[in-house]
Length: 257
Image (cartoon, rainbow, N blue to C red; front, side, top):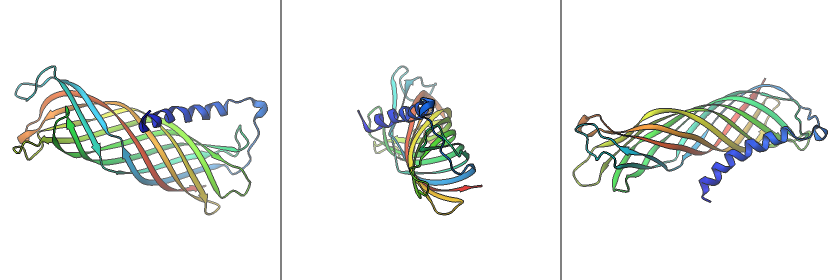
């Protein structure tokens, strides 16, 4: 199983584990006392977009190069990008499991990365452009509390929501003739998203925590267009679709009210 296949499996397993814990036998459930209330958080860090493949069937309009019915497969690699996220949530004073302290939140995020390289139908081309994603997700978190005065708190969580993926991916053949983009993958697509994450929080004061986390986000397959753009043209070539998966590392600050 590949690295990113394992990450996709983790996306499904963590939320399922959380639900299973919450629905465990009431006789085993104990109250976990502690602080409760509203909080806000802000975080940022590095975003690693997985290699993407946008695939479809060529159906070029008149005057656009290509062969109707031929495959259109645009494989794209990305540089390391960045992310920024903000959330407002509520931390509960007790949970169903004695050592798990739950919270729920609504989060808005933005991530962006530049295109580093790629290939169209396995050919030799020069690539450029970028991709960005805006997400709105509802998340569930569980702090792992093992003592009353614990200052370093592990946590895990998951969430789901929607993501808007914008692509501006351009390329041209390395044939010694073209020196500017001749084709590109463009468009904006709104899709279902899920995320899974683990992290550590450190309590620096009564009201403030700092945290660091790793997260995997999966965005369902989106629909885009391959277009011919040489010399200022803008001709349709093919409808293409592809997944957008990312892994991120970030640090942030949480303030409680």
